Amino acid sequence: MLNYLRSILLALLPTVASAQPTLAWQHNYGGSANEFPGSIQPTTDGGYIVLAFSYSNDGQVTGNHGQADFWAVKLDGSGELEWQRCLGSSGTDSPGAMQQTPDGGYIAVGTANTADGDITSNAGLSDIWAVKLSATGTLEWERSYGGSLTETGRWLHVLPNGEVLLFGETSSPEIEGSLGQRDVFVIRIASDGSQLDHHRYGGTDEDLIGYFGYLQDGSLMFSGSTYSSNGHAEGNHGGTDGMVISLDETLNVNWHTCIGGSAYENATAICEDIDGNIYVCVSSNSQNSQITNFHGGTDFWIAKLSAGGDFLMGNSFGGSENDLPWSIIPRPDGGGVCIRCGSVV
Image 1: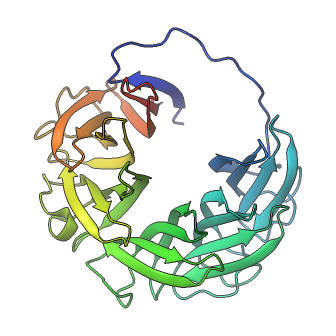
Image 2: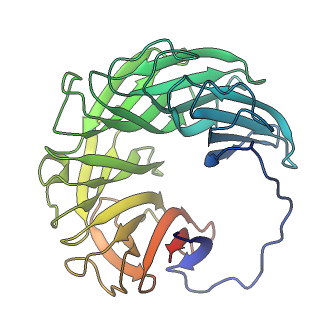
């Protein structure tokens, strides 16, 4: 069996801080079957909202609808469970992310392929499913978005006006703006779940979203992976490249770029530092083009771009086996970025 070792690494930094973090608290959550963490966000009351993937219907988990559900867990500031709720259907419902909303409630997004239980409709093989909860976990509304084929819900972002951006992928050809086999899909919805608009990004082949972020000028950017070499993926270096796209406030493209080499790149995370530079976290097994210092297996590769998307530099980190990046954040002091990564040995 593969052993997954996850740690916090500091890369592209002038110095490494010597202070060691202190464990404030730790808890286990779940039942007798499998639970997998999805996302965790701080809440305005000093606690946390967690969205997980649960197969259990015992222990701390109640109300499972069958197979795997979204599992929403509200914790206080000490990690004690305040309430929990299973959300989904008799099928396998895959959670993406969850955030607090301006009214004090919560909204979650993920993927669903069955219409029963909490889910009232399904348009195709799988839909993007969003569900709104009150501050105490009561279901207020739910809605499915998609077409005749496959949609996947990955991330969301709650805007200050209460509107929400849903991030995922779509392969349904009848949804307006189709570019190819699978496109990155961004949907803007109102606070009641009604769809306001949507956009598709990519080329004629497979295009997948990694993560998103906002730039200091208010524009949105996201990273992803592309098998395409045209459209928004023009400039692919071969095989699968990392893809970075900048959007304006109406979700139209400001600029786009591909980064990587001739083999495989998967852009998993993205951030901006205080100087306006963009850092992209990428899994890579290429050994040419923009990729340098390959160590073996799959490395994690950090690419630095200008505010306009021009490639500035990159560096690979890892050993002879597979090393995978998970997330990246800027250091508040402007001294570079922090990367969370894992090794598969």
